[in-house]
Image 1 (cartoon, rainbow, N blue to C red):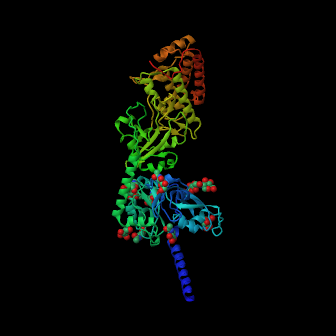
Image 2: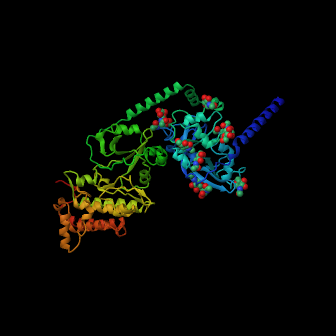
Image 3: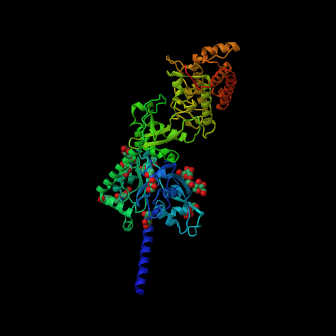
Length: 621
Ligand SMILES: *[C@@H]1O[C@H](CO)[C@@H](O)[C@H](O)[C@H]1NC(C)=O
Ligand SMILES: *[C@@H]1O[C@H](CO)[C@@H](O)[C@H](O)[C@H]1NC(C)=O
Ligand SMILES: *[C@@H]1O[C@H](CO)[C@@H](O)[C@H](O)[C@H]1NC(C)=O
Ligand SMILES: *[C@@H]1O[C@H](CO)[C@@H](O)[C@H](O)[C@H]1NC(C)=O
Ligand SMILES: *[C@@H]1O[C@H](CO)[C@@H](O)[C@H](O)[C@H]1NC(C)=O
Ligand SMILES: *[C@@H]1O[C@H](CO)[C@@H](O)[C@H](O)[C@H]1NC(C)=O
Ligand SMILES: *[C@@H]1O[C@H](CO)[C@@H](O)[C@H](O)[C@H]1NC(C)=O
Ligand SMILES: *[C@@H]1O[C@H](CO)[C@@H](O)[C@H](O)[C@H]1NC(C)=O
Ligand SMILES: *[C@@H]1O[C@H](CO)[C@@H](O)[C@H](O)[C@H]1NC(C)=O
Ligand SMILES: *[C@@H]1O[C@H](CO)[C@@H](O)[C@H](O)[C@H]1NC(C)=O
């Protein structure tokens, strides 16, 4: 008995010792981290680590999300997981997004690249244990010590915060040119080899060697160069190690079976697919819209670029939490597979999801800019983004907006609608748009410039209140100079055409043109290509009588049939002319404009109290 126990402790010693040995050997010289330089690559960048669900603590997206300080949907989307609350299978592979930075340590170590993850020390934790289990060797305890110089590794206080540096790299310019958009951090397992990794990730052996050298040891972090994340329907992890095979967990058995018997795995996927399809059919409550609204949007199919799609997932992953993420099947169903008859305009479709109407905009270029801007703004006079959808197969992105019932201002002013807008409604629309613009100019940091204000980008809801749509060209940040002139003829501020100067004052100019359209009922640019704003010079010169006479010539014929306050109209025209100053610095700010327009509304309101009934929003002809 005694001999036995001695023998046992000797065995334990041997095992521990050999483990220690292999540890020091395996870590090699790069234990403190991977050198980086901000001159060769752009840091920080968004990248991914391959993480495996791990029993017992990391078998759901919530706990893995906590570990990496990211939300569940940001892991679910790239990892091809539809239900963010359902438990994961042990060893299931996940792509977890991280933000990779290049950080200076000290003069001997220099700069190393890592994603800094906050971790709160719990009872029993050591740097080694957390690195090798929680973070699965995506970092090393040596590196943790280096980035936490204030913590004593042998005396960690429970509840104190440590930064765990998860190893990562950002692609350099050569790699970016060769379409390496990500260097996925992956822990090299004993059963891996570069050729198996290359085929699993859709990379090449040579490119993996170029990045990692040819001396990779088990449990080193390697960086796999890829142009896009591979799908995760097949397990990327190597076959389960003997340790995890021993777990007689039912789920473990299921996955083991899946790996062992490829055909069964395929069958499983097929059955899952069938089930999902049936689910989708059951959910179908499609109310096929028969009335095709003449709601106008702008064409979204500018500058289609093949490369744009590749970064789609990474770019939008920050927004997955904020908006509803629709499935491509859901949108196909909502729009009758993008049926022509449901086109609102350009590539915007009307769709019905669970009985709710939406405007669905298909973009075959990067929606990142528009998302970035829309997530900052929230105002009643701006069209609301409800969600989006990514179709990685075709590298398309779809933005799903609230559906605005009454279509564009352009269609009301210049279309052949029987109903016409009365002056009061036009004035309210002007004030609504001014309020929306004031909001984006004054209350967003950095400021947002819409860059494409025009009557077809102004939508009217059921109460004929206006909402600004289409932030596809918007820019955030001011006084930038663009080389690439965008916008719409007839609305573009002259200084932008000449110098490409982007400022809030260019929106003010375009808004002036919209006011002219409201007053005159004329299009911003006529059939001969003459712009409306060039014709207003001198309209308000001379005596009061001359002004009124001139205004009557200018006004929409339809408005002349109404009893309206000419003072109100002259007032709005004064605002419009100020907006249209050739010198941007002379144009008023949106704050002044809102104030001046509200005054015009008061003028009109006083009159309406006495007389006719302009209260009906739309007057029939
Ligand atoms: C090292 O990182 C710091 C930021 O932590 C950066 O400002 C500096 O440029 C980097 N140095 C090199 C050589 O990349
Ligand atoms: C997701 O999974 C959880 C737990 O398995 C389940 O309760 C929930 O209904 C699922 N949700 C959907 C939308 O399938
Ligand atoms: C990590 O913790 C520090 C200080 O506690 C905090 O300033 C920082 O924002 C945290 N980072 C993340 C990603 O939560
Ligand atoms: C991390 O590496 C150590 C050896 O250095 C190994 O024993 C351990 O199993 C690895 N952890 C994981 C999760 O693979
Ligand atoms: C840099 O940090 C390492 C690890 O903390 C330390 O061993 C080394 O002495 C430091 N070098 C300098 C110059 O501070
Ligand atoms: C980039 O691609 C070119 C041609 O495809 C190849 O010759 C070159 O070696 C590649 N460079 C790297 C760093 O992979
Ligand atoms: C790499 O691993 C795969 C299976 O994991 C194996 O079939 C293949 O022979 C290995 N290749 C080399 C060069 O070791
Ligand atoms: C980019 O990285 C690759 C692989 O590590 C290397 O061969 C190449 O020289 C680097 N290019 C630049 C510009 O640093
Ligand atoms: C690894 O690379 C070095 C130099 O890059 C080369 O001398 C050596 O032969 C390579 N070893 C193997 C096994 O390919
Ligand atoms: C996502 O998973 C489903 C079923 O598991 C599979 O059919 C599909 O191909 C996967 N998508 C990707 C992009 O891998």
